[in-house]
Image 1 (cartoon, rainbow, N blue to C red):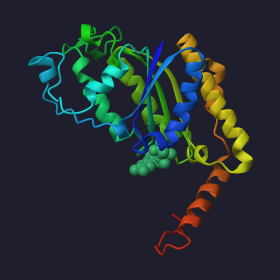
Image 2: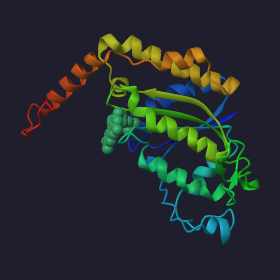
Image 3: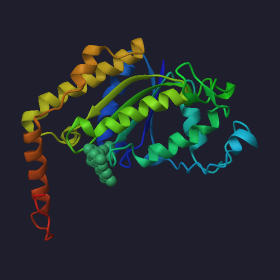
Image 4: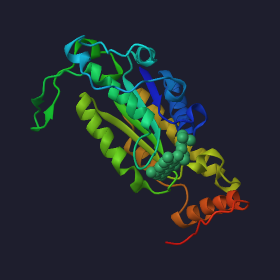
Length: 254
Ligand SMILES: Cc1cc2nc3c(=O)[nH]c(=O)nc-3n(C[C@H](O)[C@H](O)[C@H](O)COP(=O)(O)O)c2cc1C
C-alpha cells in the first residue's frame, strides 16, 4: 500500500500540519506502507489556466510543462491513499493545495452524465488516471487556530464533494481545532498532546492496514485538547505577551 501526502501549508515541513502528518505517516509505515510526503511549499505548481487543452487539444496532457506538477504526480503514482494536509485558511483549504487540486483536471473525462443519485458528474476514469493520485481514496488532515471544530465544516463538506468528483472515497478526516497547542504545548498538556499524536499514528496504522479508520479511533480524535475557555485564556495570553511592546489599538471587546 502506497500513501502520498500533499501538504499545502506555506510553512511546509516546519508547519503544525506536518506534526499531524508525521504522526499519521509513522503509523502507516509501521503497518508496512510505503509513504511519500510532499510539501507544496517546496514546489512550484502553476495555476490551471482553464484552457481545457488537456481535454480537447492534447488529451491527458497539460500545456504547463515548466513547473513541478509532473514530478509531484510521478512521486504519487500508484498510491491507494492520497492525504490532503492543510492549515485552515479563512475557513477553507490553503491556496497552494487548491492550485494543486485544480491541475488534476487533466485526468477527468470531459463528458457529463447523471450518476445513480441523479447528480451530474464526469464519468468513468481515463486510462492514464487509473493509477494516478486522481483516483486514490482520500484522507483530509487539517489544523486551525480558532479553536473550534465548526470552523472545519466547509473543508469537511468539500473533501466529500471532491471524492464524488474524482469517483473516489473519503476514508478519514482528522482535524485539530486547537492546532497551535501541537507545536509547543505547555508542560501540563504534553501528555495529552502525546496521546493525541499516538492516536493519529494509530489512524495511520489502521488506514494502511485496513483502508479504513476504526470508529473508536475516529471518535477519540474528534476531541479538543482543552475546554474552550481555557484555550481562549492561553491563546490570548500568548498574544498579549507578543504585543507587550507593540503599540497598536487592538482591543479585547466586540
Ligand atoms: C491567512 C490565514 C488565515 C487563517 N484562517 C484561519 C481560519 O479560518 N480558521 C482557523 O481556525 N485558523 C486560521 N488560521 C490559523 C492557521 O490555521 C494556524 O496558524 C495553523 O496552525 C497553521 O498551520 P501550519 O503551521 O501548518 O501552516 C489562519 C492563518 C492564516 C495565516
